[in-house]
Amino acid sequence: MINGMIWKMKDLYEYQTNTIWIKEYPIHYAGTKFNSRMTIIRLSSGNLFIHSPCNIDEPTKIAIKKLGKVEFIVAPGSYHYLYVESAQKAFPNAETFICPGIEIKNPQLEFDWLLGNRPDKRWENDFEQVLVRGNKYIWEVAFYHKITKTLILVDLIENFTDETEDVNWILKFWFKFVFRMWENPKPAPEYQLGWQDKNAVSKTFKKILSWDFERIVISHGDLIEKNAKEVAIRAWQ
Image (cartoon, rainbow, N blue to C red; front, side, top):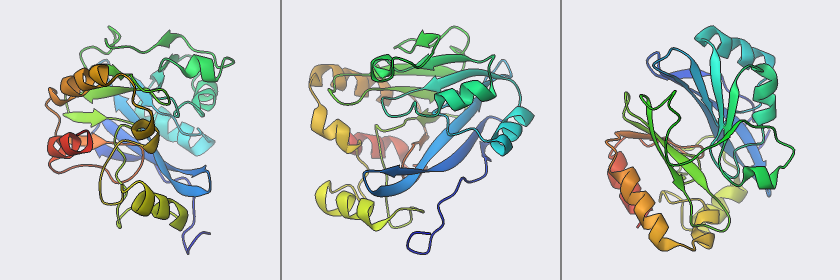
């Protein structure tokens, strides 16, 4: 228990009717404590796309299997691959896609394909996507779910506020007084410290902002459900 809060896996919940589900899970990183999110999307084929998997314990596995067949396991960012093997063990027939660079960080991780700027033909009716590169510390692939008008990110925006649950004082100190990101959505600190190819980054942001999204699912902090595009523009200025 930290500051009266108990860190534990939360239940999988339906976010967009019969289409998107989310599960929050705890992260402990450099003394900070906060939550991350796994997102599950039902594709137009009826099969499931697991984005940024959490540790798949038995109750989570059962809950996911009730939704349908898992076809894809996706590690979308440089820091979002730690539970891929857990997902692979739970769903051994699923194909694994990873963000470029993960194969260098973890050469032992087995995977089928690298993600890029173009969606796989099996989900091109469901998603637009783009590889966010140009940073020496962190890359990710942004996904736009066309049917629900939902932008799905991992670290390209973080949104910690006084309403954010399960955050300890260490994270609040760093984000409020050092990075000035408390109540001020911005890319993760690794992004801010590592931009190199700003021209490539600018083109990527323009592509993302051309998508007609109305909400943003992010991995860390509060979901962005109002004025989503305006929030993204300010975050990426």
